[in-house]
Image (tube, rainbow, N blue to C red; front, side, top):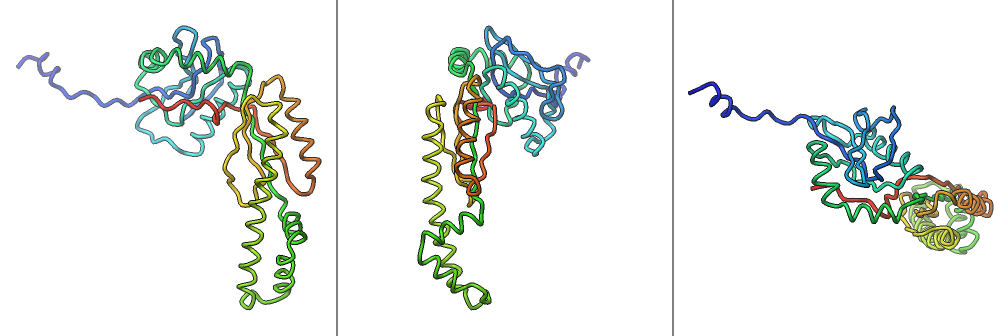
Amino acid sequence: MSTSEQANDAPEEPRTGGVYVYGIAPADVETDEDAVGVCDGSVSIVTRGDIAALVSEISVDRPLGTPEDLRAHAHLLDGTSGVAPVLPLRFGAVMTDGDAVEAELLAAHAEEFAAALKELEGRAQYVVKGRYVEKAILREVIDENAQAGELRDTIRDQPEETTRDARMALGEIVSNAIVAKRDEDTAKVVETLTPLAGSVNVREPTHEEEAAQVAVLVEVARQEELEEAVEALAEEWDGRVDMRLLGPMAAYDFVVTQKPD
């Protein structure tokens, strides 16, 4: 057997590198020279016509999913969203190389991506979060519910083992009351933000004392108006609900693109 035949029969070396794709942006997007992505990779772009993919090289031998990976993914997309529309891809989108990104992702979905980017032009996502102040919301529930007040008096200064049933009953009343208040307060947040937002998405609560968590798609130029609206709510609910405004960030709640096949 010749040397060339032996070489052709040799097993193919396993692929150890790939290209991680963060999201889709206009082709004229510029990344900071010191922008760092997943695994501390340098961020670059792959373009096709008027659209581009934000990418970095990655070792496929290294599993993804650490908190640092997730933060790097979000940090890059959120930073981009403040200066250009960006379509975030699901975390963990890895392709073989830049040519595959251009042909299998950008070329294959060019019209879809271009239309979505046009819809996002000048807009970014913001998230409004409110959390009840524990003592204040408990006092509010007890003041409004006679049974809760009676149960509170029953268990006051009594050993836990002798008031187990009363404590459980009070806990259930408080829990149900907070759910009802959350629905009411979330509706008020939505009503307040809707005039400013192109789209609104109510998120599921992530904490039992959460008062509201609402994502909105807002023109970046109207951020100051949004801040003023949230501040007005914070003043109205001072001492009752702690309010936070996060953003601008990528439009995860509205246009997240699936990972490429």
